[in-house]
Length: 165
Image (cartoon, rainbow, N blue to C red):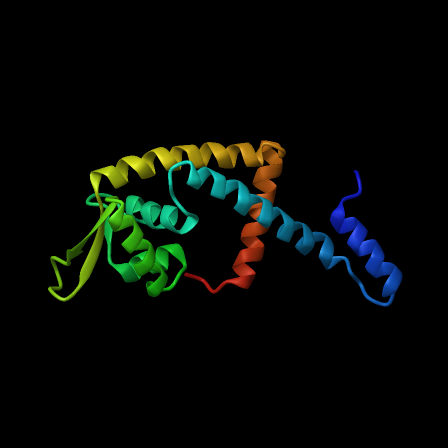
């Protein structure tokens, strides 16, 4: 295996602080660097469709809702892991672009819903198809078996860090 950036950082710390176990940097440092690469690569894919990551997430959350492709802003926040304030700003931009509409809730006259427009559905269907191809490309360095092992390990670790749904 070739030496990488994280190996060099660990070696320097081992020299400067031989009293500390810096082995966690091997995993966490690499995950941090991989996350930065993935974020940048995925953003390029969203931009091809004129979307930011956040806008893509809102459209995807609405598309996953099924017909009629609508959710309340609070639901969108839950499904995208951002605040309702952030959802509101994203929905504003998407509404201006003609990709979503705000509607009154049919069950609660005071409530609001956000719904994909036909143009929004077409866009997210194209963008999501490209997104999945991009994710496949990004995982191509791993075999199917390695990818499955990594997913299992990350699932275990994430479960230990996050509260259950």
